[in-house]
Amino acid sequence: MLNRKVSNYLYYGILILIVGTVLLIRSITLGNINAKITQLEESNISLQKTNDDLEKSVEEYKDIQINHLYELYGQVPNYYSQTELTHYTFAMLEVIGINESVDFQREVDPDSEVTFTDGTTFKQLQEDFKIVEVQVYFTTMDDSVIEEFIDLLFNSEQVFIVSSIEYYSPDGINYIGVKINFLAFYKLEDAS
Image (cartoon, rainbow, N blue to C red; front, top):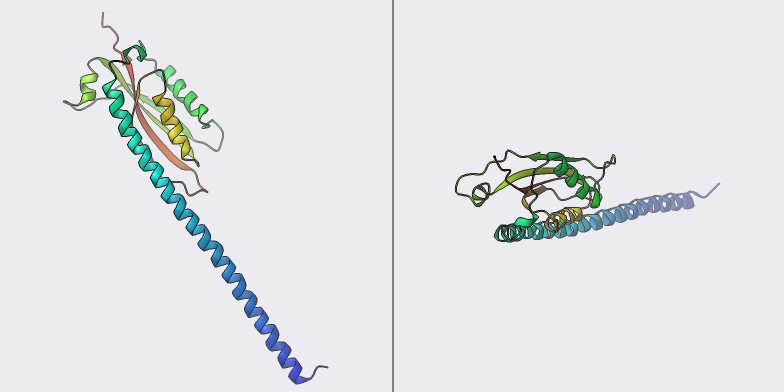
């Protein structure tokens, strides 16, 4: 049997060792959490910058496409087919990696009855072209696919103008919903 004095020293030593271990584990855990918070803050700043750049690009491309729309008349299809436009949009989504897998949700909704307010440029263009608004919705964890999709629209053989983009920055764990509205232009069908 151990001496009472040695037993007390052993008891206090084990108690100090347990408290030290708990404080060490707590310190390491807090350090990891702080590192993750810092990383997420940096990621959010980067994503906000990317979002701002995308908005500037959309505004820039919107003006350029409107100014050169008459020069691009040869790139406006002769007729409108909702099926072809829907399949073409799905094909562009496939190119950027948004496919029919369970992980992604995607929807394409063309609206051929879009109207614009009087006095706007688009209202004037409706006299010369059939304008179809396409709403595209998909989910992703990588916001770079948004820019890739806009690049595909801009570099397409057909005239497309992005009218709005709506999404929230991903947190790296969950999918985000992305809603992009764009306008597709077609030659007016002759009434005769």
